[in-house]
Length: 153
Image (cartoon, rainbow, N blue to C red; front, side, top):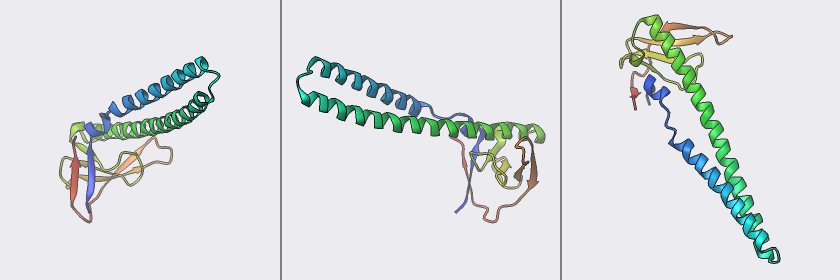
């Protein structure tokens, strides 16, 4: 049971291959619906193709809906991690250190998150965010359980 800290580079470089895969699945689903629609229109007299079209269309629309929901969640996570990256740039400027020396224990900005300078718990701060979310205050802090894991990749 320890605390995990994320490097600035981890927060700013999110993998986009998953988003590309999701877009691919959405496009393949749309093409499949169009293909079955064309096939159904060629064989209007056969009810089995109509039923197959309805079944495939429902499955594909469900898949597309799930992928769109996942894309929105991914975008939200990216926006949140960019907000933490902005906070870390501000802390780096205030403390006059390189942004690559800073680590945060959260991928969202909130009061109570921890920021540490370097891979040590000697320079650790608790962040207090103002009610308007436009300013912050750093307070020196110490962990109760000093077991820390740093995620750098």
